[in-house]
Length: 264
Image (cartoon, rainbow, N blue to C red; front, side, top):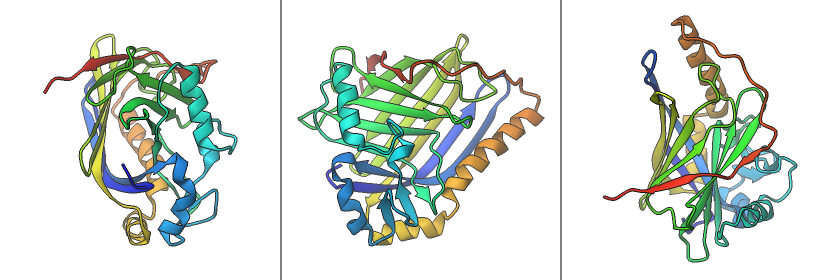
């Protein structure tokens, strides 16, 4: 991504494989923003978007990273440096914007590039509906660029009452000229349990694009939360077991991951 930001129009798909099959898909849109160029976005948006400002669509720094409203890029640089990850290039944040002041991101992704523009690491920022969050730092142990492959890490944060905290995540990130794809699988001791994907097409970040998405999905943020609870109700009505919520992990960052190259 060479622009300061882009709008991605697409969908989210979720499928449970056991002990009963359950799947759904919803249309969504999200933003991907260069954290080093946030000051350009309000002018590009024609007033439809603001950073820490009251606008129809917005990014609030306190929703991400250190959660204190401070500048996100220096925080990300320090986290990467402390973890020994060489990612001195652009950092792009992918998330749902706040819509009319309301927002919730089940997961946001920070794409961290090296000085040559290769994807060196991804920070997956997971939020649950209990007000807790956790960061998973995904990178190849030998420092290889994540141009194509699968990243795996241990699950740490409780997310769904219909899953335990045990198991692992498997991530896939793909990007074409305009296509965007993220796949997240959850595996337990028996294998693949949940398969989730976000896919869409990148569009220019401008007033017309933002206005169009707002008119198409004025309840985007509210809909994300409502759909989470609606799907949970459907699973409960079908008799799926509810697991008791454990205490959150003491640390907010998990930095261990494995990388498997995908050959095409």
